[in-house]
Amino acid sequence: MAPAFTISYGMFGSADGREVSSLGKNQHIVPHEGGWAVRGEGNSRVTSTHETQADAIDRGREIARNQQSELLIHGRDGQIRDRDSYGNDPFPPRG
Image (cartoon, rainbow, N blue to C red; front, side, top):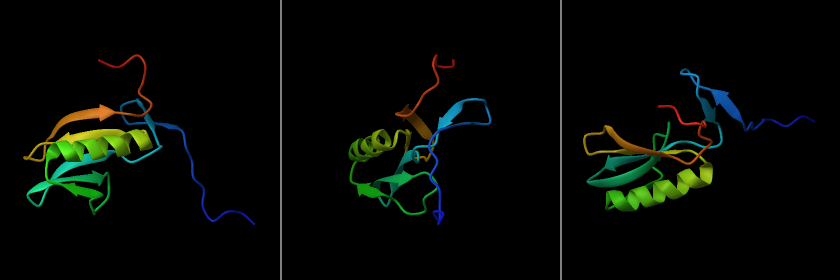
């Protein structure tokens, strides 16, 4: 009997030609109800809430490392102000 689903791990190309890891969801640090939250990319619900942005970043970084994904840090205005990658980065880096 065949399994009901298949999980694939590997590298896929992005629209700009970079390789992108499919191991985990990017983690976003976002303003949330007077504090800060960690939200997995594409999720409607937050993963965790924190009083300070620093605490949220610490938790988001831990998750991103475990999932080999990216951490995207948003400012109070919602704009991405910083990002860190814990996945399979292209080498040499673009830029």
